[in-house]
Image 1 (cartoon, rainbow over the protein chains, first blue to last red):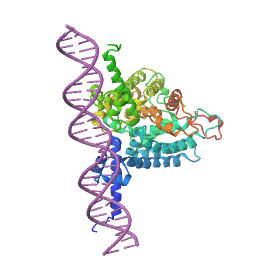
Image 2 (cartoon, helix red, strand yellow):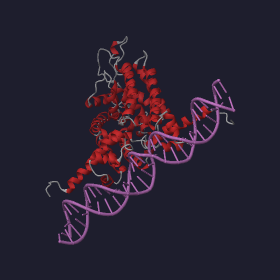
Image 3 (cartoon, each protein chain N blue to C red):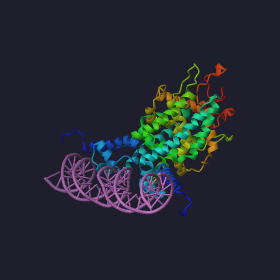
Image 4 (tube, protein in one colour):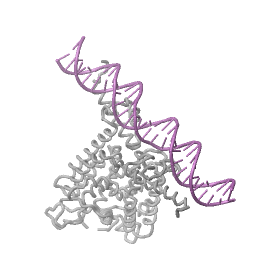
Length: 225
Length: 225
DNA sequence: AAAACCATTAAACAATCGTTTGATTAAGGC
DNA sequence: GCCTTAATCAAACGATTGTTTAATGGTTTT
């Protein structure tokens, strides 16, 4: 043949084009609102290729979810484990996760936005991943509690809270672009990470409305240490 | 007529049945995945009634979004304004918002999950609400900064962060029900509010892995004061 | 060269989609 | 009692949905 690429390489190209196109379209319009013909046309492949490679339209979604979740779970396992103090482990977890979210923001949007929907097949698929995530959070963050037993946050609450907190920038990102009031400079991802880490360490740092006591001026909201 | 209800009352009943059914179905399956016939059958009204009352299927969604957003914005305006210190205003805002989310969790899920999608009509509709919300947060939380100019979080970052934080319980709620590991007792809404307020005031309170200093046992993650 | 395998294609499948139409019913104002 | 207005209904509109089929071209294996 006159082409260097083998047939298998071209196949990989087609499969990957479908995948990337689907990620982009699902994130933009949602899973249900995206038709297989739209995917096929945008990816410039034949309609049947989608079912050929992924079995069904839902199969494409499952693949996206698996890819995203497995990466996220790997980060949690790696960064939250260890003997270091909980403070620095959490910081490393947040840093790695937010960067991961930034790289895969479209898959993140799909994973979160398509969350509560009621397709038994998809929901159980996601519950399996979520269960593993909750177990890691429970083992590494919630479980190592002293016998003081001080207000134990259940992992089924903590894991969503952390994830939702880190994802907010990307979840609301597309909407905030359309808002763009005057006084809003966008934060870069590095600063955003610092804000989150600070918030989880010391509380939300907000400037006071200047009052009578100027010494407590720039402290965090709650209390000054 | 033999019925006490006037015609207008019956109409209100039909309109309301459509509305409530749509809220429930949209939250469960998503907007695009829910058909008008499914709404009509579930609400036990004729198919044409939906377009008769709401103009279109999209009109139902807009009504839901307007209802939810206006309530949320009213809370923000009421609770975040005033001369009280930022600390207690934030606490009151969170308390009222989380309770509001709890009452309208289905509308919350719709509003958030359907967020980034690319329907120009809907997106601009939401951007208008979001812009007002951002302005309130900017005026009441971000703007009153001392001349110290201490790490100003832009409102387009803070507003999503707060909203996302408060919503996490309800966004991930349906999924977490399917997870239910053994050691996870669910928090009631009141305790959940306390956790959030504490987090924003002092940082995330997590039990230390017991080390040498038992007095700093139950302190927050970051530092002990 | 024959056989097996894989990727690709056009065409058609039945089902469902959101919306519109025109007729029918019953209520309230005069 | 007449007229206007509003609510409800069955039926149909064309368009699009996800999936399947059978045939074809090219590559690799035997």
